[in-house]
Image (tube, rainbow, N blue to C red; front, side):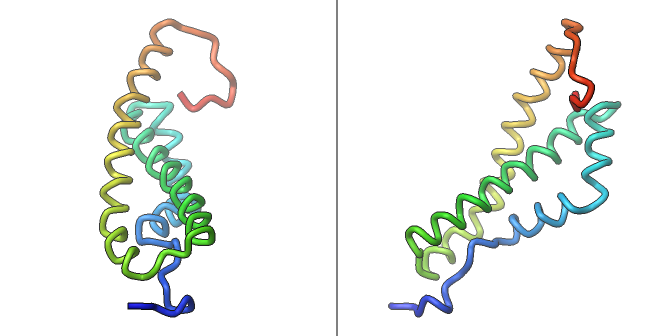
Amino acid sequence: MDVPRSTRSRSGSAANWLALLLWISPLRILAIRWLRGPRPVAGLAFITYVATTAVNTVNATVEYVRIGWPAEVWVVLAPLIPLERLGLTAVGTFIGIGVIRGLRQVNLVKAKEAGY
């Protein structure tokens, strides 16, 4: 089935839009406070989700222009994208929290703008 280019799905999935809304919301500042304070896991998970989804948005846009996937492909990908983002967020948070705890324990001098 050939779908006209004008009706094909664009790169913006619900996960991408959610990350954009979270990035421009005041929750971003709250996540930085969590990361620096008593809730580093929540802060890191929030930041990791927004960052990995931003990368996905850029990559999906480039791939859409380069390949021009038909709507049938997006029907399959759309439900998988949020699951992939959650998986990457969980793995990134797990690794990142270990790195942050290690850096805090060795008492390295950190940059003034560092979130950890």
